[in-house]
Image (cartoon, rainbow, N blue to C red):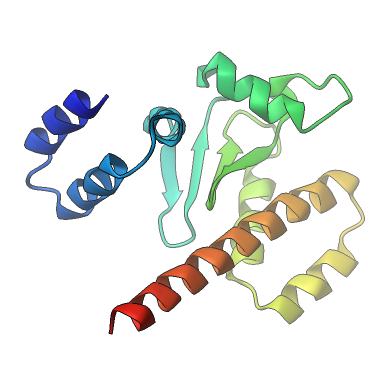
Length: 161
């Protein structure tokens, strides 16, 4: 796996941000490295929708079988992958671009992620659809992850200085 990283680093010498990411990957244990590789593979099949809010979209049929199993494991009701409206990989939100309500889901996702905590609470109270409430539950998890990541970065920079 590390040989592959070396090859990719050579090809990415012009992209400093991606190169830094690859250097960080060197530090990961093999099992975490495989998980990162799966995420990168998934994201390579996705279209960046809103980079500022870390929102992507893809066709559910293009996801790996392993990732589909992980996503469906969250539901105990025997759902099919085609019915999934969105999911998260870490702090990235990935929408099902083939969903008949994709435009509504994207609007909700962007509004919710850009909102203050008070605005999110107000929005949740106004939602009547259980599927839209489910989406806000996923987004709350993403917001929580992002908060932890920000805390960790802030704390790390304070310790370094």
